[in-house]
Length: 289
Image (cartoon, helix red, strand yellow):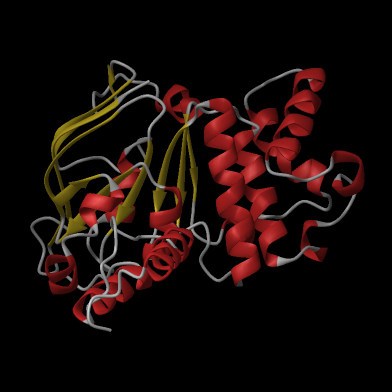
């Protein structure tokens, strides 16, 4: 299920004294099964863009085609589109409200009009997909959980609706390193096992380097870079000029090369840095250092 974005423009408060162009002629295609991250400085248009993908926001101009259907047309049933595209907002645990985890995850599927048998089947499957044991957690209050576990419950509530596309807005925001790593691993596993098209908005370059197959960089409502992480992070000067950065190990690589280390390949993750640096030390490729 592909998503095509054509000449998309969105203007908040158009015609008023506080008019702001949030999206400026965006043209993108996200193919079925891709794992994409959107990065950009605050106010670059990331959240505005993803809210167009399931019809929460209407474009000022342009169109969005989801699975061959132009969702910007007036007669389109957006409820059907939202069954296909699940959106998890930033800090989704604030939207938890039921007395048990099971009931919270049941909420979305029940609103789809499914049978009780199908609802229960989906809840068990969704909890398994996000790494929560059904028998252990189903009767617990979601408010007794850690931040990372609450986030998993919130994601499970969307996954239980079995969307073809999963969109997450800053899924690791506010989590400690352990919780962040757990959520990223779970999202990556979801994508791998179920070939679910996944779109993540993130401010963390380290997270992007670990999980993304494709990175789209937004700046002032425009898509200014689009490619694989390794190529995107070569544009250090450009990224810094728009208020972004690159993974810390990429800065480390540049500093080591300036000191004379001869390193093979481009480093964007800690695991890569460890492997490349150890290889350079063992082979004695240290330049003049």
